[in-house]
Image 1 (tube, one colour):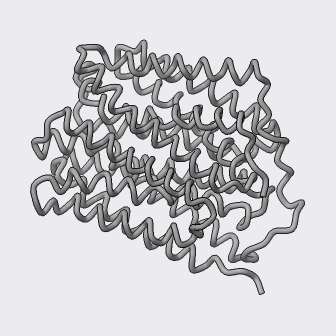
Image 2 (cartoon, helix red, strand yellow):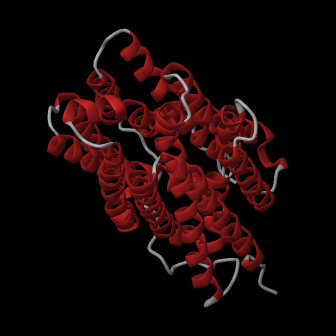
Image 3 (cartoon, helix red, strand yellow):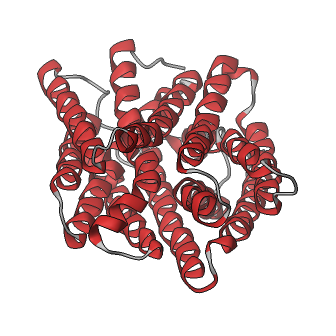
Amino acid sequence: MSRVRPPLMVLGFALFILLGMPEGVLGTAWPSIREEVGRPVSDLAWLVAAYTLGYLVSATGSGHLIQRFGVDRSIRSGVAVTAAGLGLYAMTSGWATVFAAALVSGLGAGTVDAALNTHFAVAGDMTAMNYLHAFFGVGATLGPLVVAGLLAAHRSWHLAYGLMGAVEVALLVVLLSRRSRFGPRVPPAGGERRTGPEPPSRRMLLWLTMLVFFTYVGAEVAYGQWSFSLLTEERGVSEQVAALVVAAYWGGLTVGRIGLAISGRRLEPRAVLRRSGAVVVAAGALFWLDPFPGADLVALPLVGLGEAGIFPAMVMLNPGWFGVAGTPRAVGYQLASSSLGAILVSGAVGTLAGSRGLGTMPATVLAVAIASLVAVRSTVALDRPVA
């Protein structure tokens, strides 16, 4: 097993903070955004769709991009595009520009996400992989707090995006000036011996992993984007408390991944997958039923804690399932599936919120979380070594 070099690890962590922050910012900033641009609450789904559509397009093509140009150039191009999208958010004054900003940001994020996940997965460093995804949670946790602080200080939500864009530009300058090396080009697919299930089982395994990403990320994004509106507009929670609870949701994701990173190789990824999915379903049911005062405020961070291990464990298993050469495309397809899940699940929540009220959100997302648990268990069941 190789190790990710410390300077590259630090850059990767910083980039993942910037990947996570917009997800945490959008849900908390949405009431202010929609008031400024004159849109209904359900139109949050359109912004999520724009972002994830851009992400879907870039993630789908990321395997080809990485194999042709390498991880370094892929990351730099993704960071540049993301910075442009955040700049659009900061300067926008109308719905069309907000929509375009979300689309451009997604295009950049999909490339950065796929390239970094590929590099860390091929390195085979489980500790670094968990820390990488923990820093995504750090960004997502900071996002609601930054917006809440700015709004409490009577500043605009635009400033949050402006600050993120400035940091993104600074990281791009570092990437260009240091001539960082995230590793050589990944070899073309088909040129190595793989372990794991043989075709057609491997093809079925790829489809199942894509289903896991579709349902898991769909639920993760829906909880992160819609919980603030549910708590404040449906359940009577103050904006300050709701922002803290949403931040704690992303914080649970972060704490869980830090714990997994500290545990290192003592926890087997397949066991992590099975147990994590069960925790998400149990906590999601508590969030939906809300059987006693404050139950939902406790349940949401527990959902985040349960979600912590799913993404990094799935990505780390890719080289063993599909080989080093097949990992970039597998990661790209999985991340594209995650984008599609985010679009469709959040869209379904928005549609139901517009027609039947925000109270439908917890049950809808819980159903997706249950589907994710079934997909995880099916994936692990199919993952059998070849005799």
